[in-house]
Length: 222
Image (cartoon, rainbow, N blue to C red):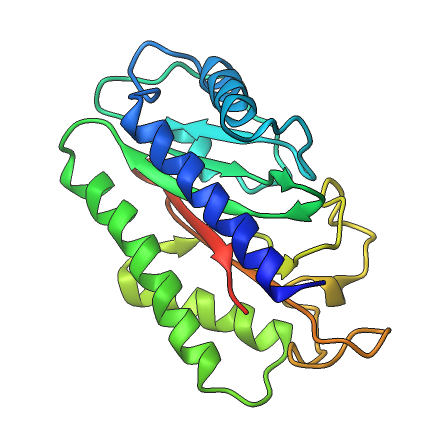
């Protein structure tokens, strides 16, 4: 897998997310499914994308507590809401996996959570870059410690995955060494079966069960 093409795919995904904001697609009164469809249509308009390598996720309010594997009810965005978007578009057969949190209104807890998941992602990226050897389980544990450090709980069953390994619809029963998962005891820096360097996605999902809010930030780690 070409690093340059992976990076280019991510740049296009980042542009898509900027356009979501610029075009003011995220508004109260719209359902998660309606926003999901609007983003799908925008991606097709901008890049001709119709193919996604994992399910497209838009989650608002209490649904932001749920991990990827869940399929909660379709909620309506509220005026003072928090939501996150997780899309895996395929650009000319190259995969991206991009997730961001958005806040409607001025709730300080929600704004803090949105900012914290981004800051924690870069904290983990910095830590990862200082390592020469680290297992998927150790990196997952580090994200849990970060959640505690920021005053949240970690909401994800995983903290990331190999880019190019799919589908992710069923984590249970799959090879855990493809994920930043508590059961993955393999060095993240280890080469793949074909002897090539593997690339990883890092995802940070912090939650507050009592306030029923969650935040999510995801992009290319390696």
